[in-house]
Amino acid sequence: MKFKARRELKRTRIEIIPMIDTMFFLLVFFMLSSLALTRLNGLPVNLPRAANAPRQAPAELTVTLDKNRKLYVNKTPVTFDTLEQTLLQKAGPNANLDLATVIINADASVPHGLVVRCIDGAREVGITRFAIATAPDQATGTEAR
Image (cartoon, rainbow, N blue to C red):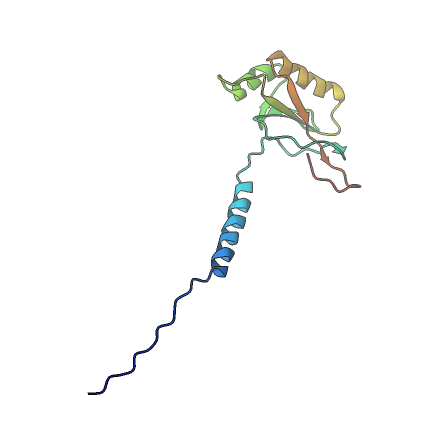
């Protein structure tokens, strides 16, 4: 009786390069999809230019003044008379107004006095932190802040 020669089995190897490629793909996918989850509370307006403005963290409250001098709080139209009440309502009943930040998103053609009036209305309810939204400066190529 003749026996067949036994084949020598090759040792299996786990290739790690395709796994690394897959992990990088997943990382990029989740990074890009998380960018789509950011909430933008302001309306599009023609912002004034600034080259050296610091970046601001996202805020819960955005006050927008468009070129027609219409006032919005987080895309909800309001009047100057109801601004304080709307800010309190949008902040929520348990909000810590000392830590709340209001972003003033005013069109470049809006008079300075209306912006000050918005800030004064927010101070009336106890908000003391403000940021003024600006567009990137075309000469320096910096991003919006």
